[in-house]
Length: 118
Image (cartoon, rainbow, N blue to C red):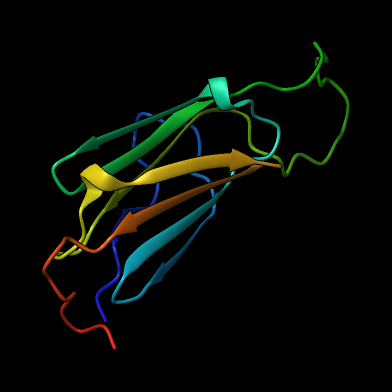
């Protein structure tokens, strides 16, 4: 089974969000964890077989952290880039954003069977 190729952290972003990807004969489902963003903060672009998700997560409030702290939540520009395997129609993809998760569904190209997928 061929999964989409993913850029781990493109150089022009501060971080890359967690992504789950499920591939079947009928579709690729991508679930991206983007807590703390509004849908308006997201930009999704598609070019040939490449899907790019980017935006900017702002720290809530105007706090300046100048004391010892733990900082595990990533803020700033982010980007995730996925290259679809052959046999899927990125032009027909549908996206929905709800409760901090972006779900993108990419159907199989009409009249094709995705190679290597049971």
